[in-house]
View 1 (cartoon, rainbow, N blue to C red):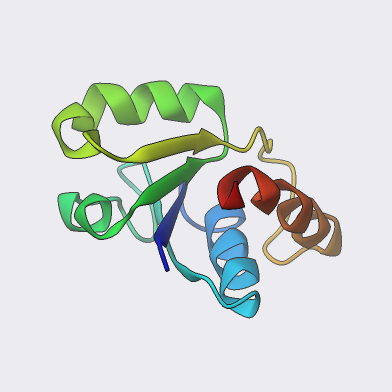
View 2: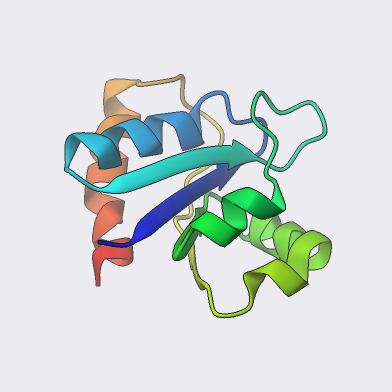
Length: 106
């Protein structure tokens, strides 16, 4: 089974929700954020652990590539296109992740 790392800005709403939804489906997952004030800031160790890295927005994908390009070699990168308009575990966000996880599981 592969390891999926979910990344958003501050690791407070979207990426922790995504990791929780993935775990409920029996997937190995973790989460982190790109911002300097993220609750769980992304590290090279996060990236080394992950087989697949799923970001919430295209801008975050670009930022991740700029900041940590060397650690992304050989990793599968996916953009889920989920805006920062939801609260942690908001039912609509959970539903959205459940449908978007199909992008990761292919």
